[in-house]
Length: 254
Ligand SMILES: C[S@@+](CC[C@H](N)C(=O)[O-])C[C@H]1O[C@@H](n2cnc3c(N)ncnc32)[C@H](O)[C@@H]1O
Image (cartoon, rainbow, N blue to C red; front, side, top):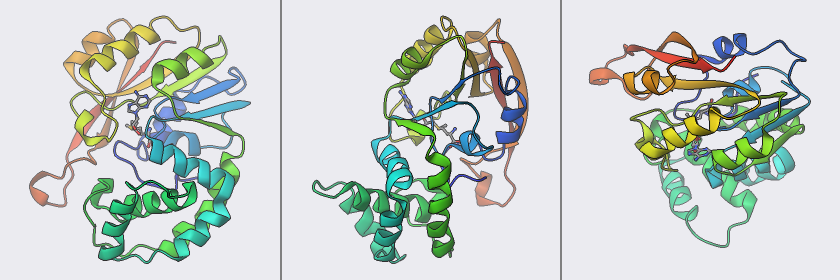
């Protein structure tokens, strides 16, 4: 199934390639998506393992996932009151900052910002006719898929430490080297090294996505690295319709 949202760096186009690198089903009991985002790999197949974990540091995103999981009908109702228009988009952007909203009110506004912003930047209104009813109806399906998923809101270091076992598979999709500014939760250059130091010492297996750059290749020298080709969803050169192709890395410890 598809995720219910787009997200910067989302793995919609690469999810099948990533799944093809998973160890055989049944050989791992824990599946942990450490940098969850829109969860494209999580949603790409039915249950990956007995225990599944979705994590992200973005509080609004995690609140949205939790509301979809536990209160999908109330969220759908709340969305009925939000018309899709430029005015309501900017109202949602302001309102999400104020205190006193319920989790459902906050989730609805964040959903609107995701759905209606240009390139999911959450800031600029993208003038596109969206099938809001379809998106709202889909929340029920997503809610069912999430019933077996534990939703966490922690820094990656804590999540890896808490869930690391011999039979854990981690999928990690951190903000890419040099693209950290596109995310609301800032990822600092030192965080790439902090992540590498963690991964060097885990008991479980990991698959890690990165942009193809010399720094990352050097950092993960010695690991099993696959280069894959894809189109770029962060930029569109010269505003034209041809998206540039570029390479990504899939790094594994098995
Ligand atoms: C490239 S996106 C993940 C995209 C996701 N794989 C998908 O398919 O949509 C990276 C995510 O990492 C989150 N993030 C940033 N810093 C983090 C941290 N220190 N620990 C956990 N998540 C973090 C961001 O909020 C962002 O959602």
